[in-house]
Image (cartoon, rainbow, N blue to C red; front, top):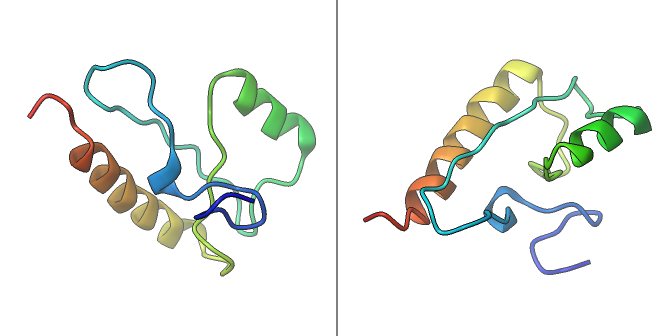
Amino acid sequence: GKEGEVGGVKRMTDVEFPGDGPRRIVVAVGPEGGWEEPYELDMFTSKGFQQITLGTRVLRSDVAVVSLLALAHEVCATGDRSD
């Protein structure tokens, strides 16, 4: 995989944002252990979601939410082109 990928899945810092406007992100948090049903992953992909990983550790959903929000805030703020 590419640098920064874990098992072929991107990290939050590798998310691609369309256009030149402010960066915005919508997060879908899976169950503990991750999304497993192929139709769920296909549905998200068809709606423009990009699959990311928080690493190899299995996180409880409540911990994953806080972690994702912190990472999303950092990625959006760091790359905000309106500064």
